[in-house]
Length: 296
Ligand code: S3P
Image 1 (tube, helix red, strand yellow):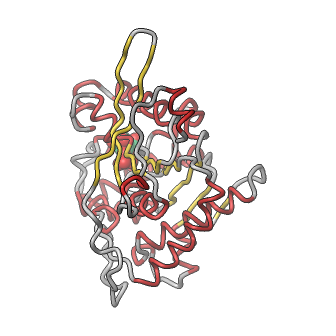
Image 2: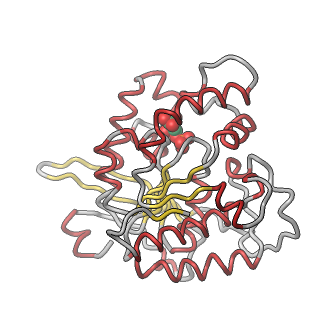
């Protein structure tokens, strides 16, 4: 965010990765809000994360990428992928002009893992809107917030967080899967560029079944084995939300990336493959702005 705008908005601290010398792997943000008479102070403070030591590791095979890699956040990108990613981000960056990127998509679609890679390569900071809501509610987990205060309370907090984020620049934001359902949230997200990570429900169910549904209150109701439970519930949720996700400026369809890269299945795609495609779709959108939907 530029200094004048920050002053206008009274942003007391903004993460600027360039300030740390060499570009850090990624930095996450904390939203701080202090209410003073007549003013609302919004600030983002840096939480530097451990260097991604695997950044230039050469992986000999894609075959070991498990269904849950996007959930685990473990990333091993081969050197050629890293170079493509870097070139791609260098092309996109001038068109972005500091605008935030909002990743939208279903639970388990990899918004956080892909978002961290994108923030790193763009020199942006990374924000997870669920984590910011948790912070605002005194550190309670999303599951606890749902249990203690109900979904509407969570959704109101989510909207507040998106509002505050919409005042900032140079962030990649992973949004909660349901954020797309409120038109007011779109008003905030359209301040930046929004990207839908479109992952087939079967793949989502596999990933979520692998890590469990405890942290995802909306998936805890169904009976049956973890995969079937996740699949049934996610299918119903996607039915309700499909159209809302399509409001995004760009769509990244994992099915289409898999075809393009001649993979048998979307589970063979690496988070870096997806980040590269996301940047390409953002680029298409920005170059043709006003010209409609950029789709993979
Ligand atoms: C939700 C998704 C979750 C979290 C909450 C509700 C949803 O975020 O916001 O459990 O309604 O789809 P993730 O998409 O990051 O899992």
